[in-house]
Image (cartoon, rainbow, N blue to C red):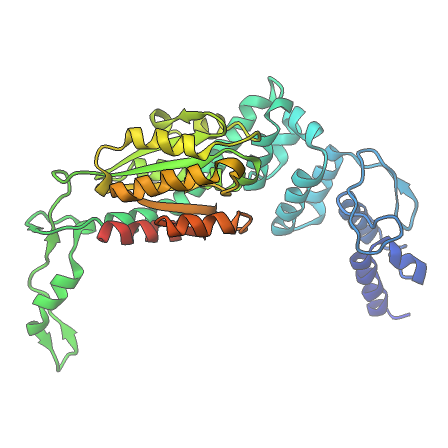
Length: 382
């Protein structure tokens, strides 16, 4: 058999899993392939005779891979993955590790937790399984959450700021030359007479800048977050977005978390890590209660945007939720309902209830943070 044929069979064996051995497709003799098979098999394994049916293998369970049995542990797996896979593949495998198995071992060993690449999935795991953290791993977990949140915030901040600050209505110009306040449209229009046709260039002899917004009444954004477990992705991103809104000029931000009770974290809105560590996942929810509380915070409805992050699953309180939404809309509040906020944007929310909320005047979205900023900008522009 040619070497290329052997390599092809090895690749097929790695792709198809253990069931391929019944057809004499193996990776026996290729030490690297056997090790890769063991590492991948630690996360995925064919089900009981059913090809393609994944079953997470238990810690310490033996895996038979061509050359015989081998015992794998989470710490050993983490070390070996670093040696056998490039960075991008390593991150994917570590996300699977976090999602599928070894959580207790991972969360109770500082050295092991420190080796795993920080990412949103790891943050979700740390938040979901906080009770498993030890005194030694708890400070490290906070450090990881802080790093991921800071990276996401840096990634989002510039675009969100530009979108919203640029949308705040300006009705006069100022001699103060502040770059972010440049009125590009007016500048181009008033300098058109200076167009040099021969050189095909527009010569600008004056720039126009919008006046500062300090004297204008601020917009009030009230972010209301459902703490149910299915909304954890959205809770992460909504918390980060609220902290960005908090830092914007001419913007006041309130942040409410709720299940069957309401927790007002407006005083911590600029500290997203503290907010996330306050999230209590699971249990029931009472959206009407949260909306009634939000109404108590509103002083000027016509300059208020309410952002409700929820799966809209209310059961017996659905009618009350729709009534409270209608009350806020009738008062002049612009309401946005988010079934999902993030980059996965799974639309796992009650669409029938969402339709009723839309009829009551709420805009319904499942979107990325940037799209939320664009939606808010349209509201601010009027």
